[in-house]
Length: 207
Image (cartoon, rainbow, N blue to C red; front, side, top):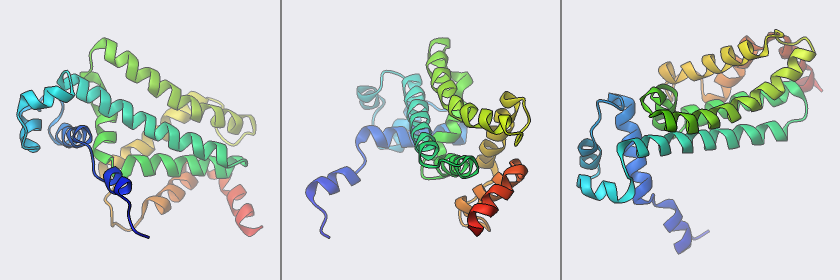
């Protein structure tokens, strides 16, 4: 099938997207505080003034990186939650989508989201934390169901924190092309984190 002009145009990142990607890469490698606007502009062959045509400030860049990351992962996990009716398959799909969003092409942005939120002003923190809370509520809903069935500890908040903490830490050590792909990693971590739901998955696979 031939690519149309519209397809080609969609495949080419906009200048704004290029700036966000470059900023996310530098923020991840150097930290937000140690990265200057000039360095971001130089990465793209731009002047600092040209960068400010697209973004009002360096913090504006950081906020947009975080907002887009949270919206992407929320949409992916919400879709997984809606697709699978049985609890074991649903939680596994949610784990898979979380890791796919975290460790995929936007790893830089997602890592910045995890570790640079303290660099935000109080007002910006409120915006990001509201999106984070909405995302975590998706997990709380399914984990509450698991707790009611005796499949996880009744302290659902702690279960959620432990789960997301383990998944998010993989951004520090996971390397593409290693012995486990993202899909296999998700399955292994799911079994480790939810041993009581392993039987449900095995029964479904046998059926």
